[in-house]
Length: 203
Image (tube, rainbow, N blue to C red; front, side):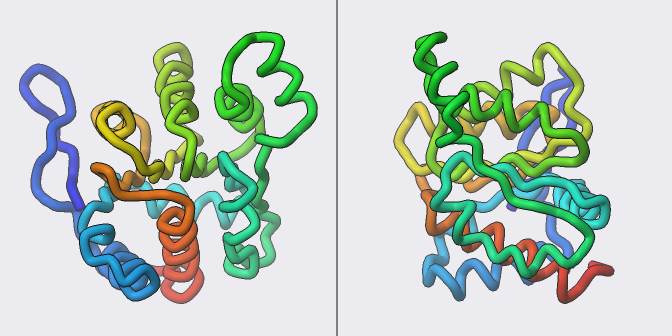
């Protein structure tokens, strides 16, 4: 768990760990679910990330995933009854067609579709690093105050670097740093976050 601090040159730097009771509960739940202590210790929470997700649930916002595997395994019952929903665009026929036309990945086109959804959003990236890159590129050209990014794809140097680029940006984020991650880890983390908010809305 790491907290970004502002350096003299204006860039975000890794500082003291960011911890509150909610974050602590979530990390314990992830470790219990995955039996992976190293995974839970790799998770970075932006200081306003949980607040953003609470607001999303209260306002009936949207969780947008990069794969149907993640979308199907998120426990929608934890969203409450205020209209929050889970969407995945990756297999949408229009996304498939546009990706072929533009010679880009479906994940990149799906990000554009996701960012067009009105209201607060949680962009969940569990398997497609290209989605993280697209979000960062979009942020360079437009504000994203209504977006939180949860990034947990697994992989080697290029994926690790992409996650660090996200952490170094000003986007609100939750990141599984290093080589850890993947679909099961992503699902465990999202469900732990939603459960914590549902059970302890004041933390």
